[in-house]
Length: 123
Image (cartoon, rainbow, N blue to C red):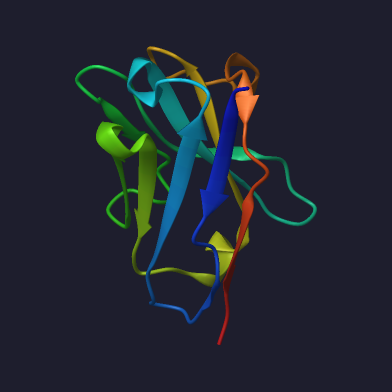
């Protein structure tokens, strides 16, 4: 059974940091691109970052460039999202999703999704 589980969400003050994890089971994550998405209350789900399989090309939304870093540990079947300099507008439920090989722009191109982890940035 293909499954993705996110963890690491929490309440953090503005300017703080969090590291989210996306752990896969039922498939070998190394062969998949993993995307991180987020959905704030009342807003559409949006792409945050993605890392492809193979060479691990990375992509970031403009809103998080320079603050977030995506990485993967294939031995642990896990992808991480390091989030620094967090802002209140980063508050959302964060999801990871998988698709074969390469990153894609559309949410519908990702076939497997986790249940999400809540990130709240507030003082």
